[in-house]
Image (cartoon, rainbow, N blue to C red; front, side, top):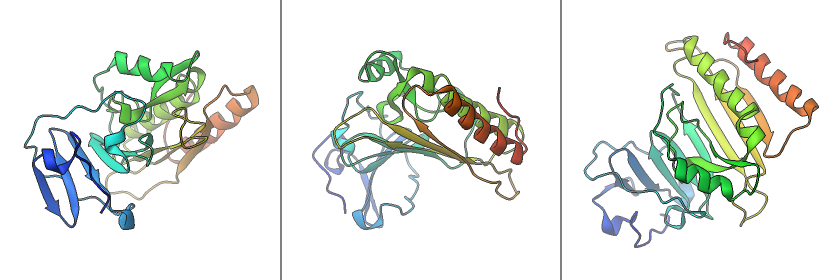
Length: 235
């Protein structure tokens, strides 16, 4: 069992359910899960009750109280051993607007310095929350360029009837202390309800301004994958 602390997220301060050795901290729409070290990749049982008000997720560089935990807030977000967002996953992605927290988005972007946004791992227009678990310093031309194009491609697949599309964003950092990622690996597997899974669409995106050649390469890879899945390509 991963060690829990006497934090606002700990079992000691919340109504908790013991289930298969996991401590599920239940809030209205947010669940923090302490992941056993021996089963980090195991599926986490879904919470069935929402007994408490939504607990706040602080907009801080390091989410100390959420280290090595999954946080459920519409989608599932994993926080690494250093308290940084590491992964965002949606098993069945849907289109829809999530409320924006401009203050937190700006704060996170400022950690990257000039030319950075507080970028969503899963877009707010794909129901991605504007909370630190889903926000990282993202180079502005990436956030508003190829990363946004990938999100648009996912929306196109959903509009094409691929309403069971799996979506994931994995963050890579240059070292154990930096909060500014150096690379994103985004992927989706389009699938229509009752149909078979299409080929995976996967991009490895540096968190830096791209050369024209690299932009074209990534856009071509994206559009080839969209076309193979019967989804509208992006311009």
